[in-house]
Structures are given as structure tokens and as C-alpha cells.
Image (cartoon, rainbow, N blue to C red):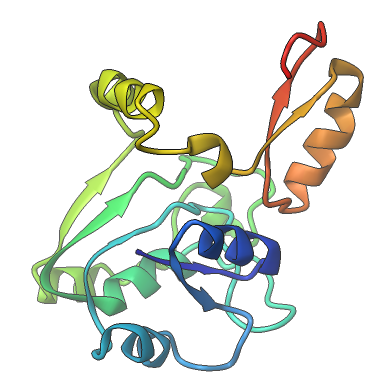
Length: 182
């Protein structure tokens, strides 16, 4: 699994449980970075977990809603699969331009069509995997809390937790209003 991000903390977190990483703050081309890892500039499948709040590549890049989706199409091999659980909305009053404000993005759908890519969009059907994941956790086959860097905080620290999360903290905050989680 390869994780691309502009946040060094999240890249370090992904690396801590075995993922290869791609630092999207660099000026290197994404296909070249992929080729350094897998030996060719394409992958069988790619997932856009970011959605409409994506940023462009390089240091100081601003919001560019279609960036991730276009990038995953560019690095997915012909007849590959693209998963899109990242949130895309029908309207974003804070959008970067008039099109983004009504949910229209500059997605290069022609590339997806030309490469015969299969797209799966929408929310992940978590209940489909619920029991299987629960059993994997109970039998110590996966350490989800470690993978997501779960951090327990008291309820009175929730505002700070939300601020940290909005700034890109490489953590998932768990609220413990009664101090019962050890």
C-alpha cells in the first residue's frame, strides 16, 4: 500500500504500520515517485480518500478540488479500479471558484474513459465489513488504534481536538467524557 500526503506527520504514521509513502510536497511528478516504489509509473488500483477539500502538490499549494481524483486516474493502469470514498458535495459555499461552489469540478473524466477505469464512489458500506473487522481486532490480527493513532482526550479538550484535527493532526481523537478509557 502506498500513501500520498502533504502532511509529514500522517506520512510517518502510515510508514509506522508498513505503508510506503509519497511526499506530495515535493516537485517530483507523481508517476515518477510511484515508479521508484513499484518499478513502473502505474498501480492496479487507487483510492481518493481526500475528496473536494484536496490541495495541489508542492509546498504552499492551495485548495484544488479535482487534484487527487485526476492524479489517481493518471497513475491507475488501463482497466484498473479507482475508489472514491472521499467526500464530494453537491454544493460548497466556501468553494475556491463558482464551479466548486455548486459541486462542479475540473475532473478529467475523458482520461478515465480512455483507460477503461472502473469507479466506485460513495460512502464505504462499513456494516458489510463490521463483523469481519471486529473479529480481526478481537483476535489481534490488526491494531486499528495504532494504525489511526487513536488518542483519548477528555470532553473538555474536544474543542482543541477538533482544532488539531482540522489542522491535519495525524490522530483520531476519542472523547472520553467520564474518564473510563485507560
